[in-house]
Image (cartoon, rainbow, N blue to C red):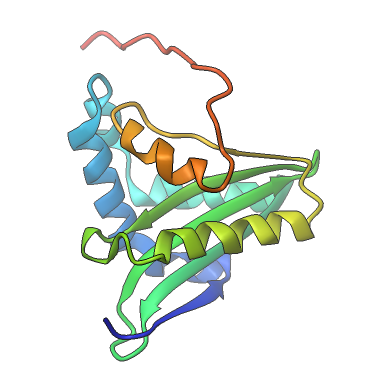
Length: 156
């Protein structure tokens, strides 16, 4: 595999993660046992606006992983820290062909280091229902389940 480079991007460059985010949304739509309609309706523009809104009430950090030779984006991680010093991995995705190569771990590590530099007192990541296979990945960074939130399924 060619070398992977990591770089921070500003919120004005967030469109460069669009295709990866769309792959993540498709993944969640296919994996969710109950909320398929939610992912079918969700658009990148809505998610982008959410990311931008986080900059009004705190801080946002986005890293992208790209193949050095081609510049092709293969992963990203969006993190936030609120004014109350609550850190969150908002969105992370690594293209399936590039998984198990340390890219996701590097992205999480970079995000957590950034949260530390912002003084985050608490750090969280939410894992969508149907993606429980991701729990061991997050456990490597000492994330453990704290509570389970149940949400009523909307009537169709």
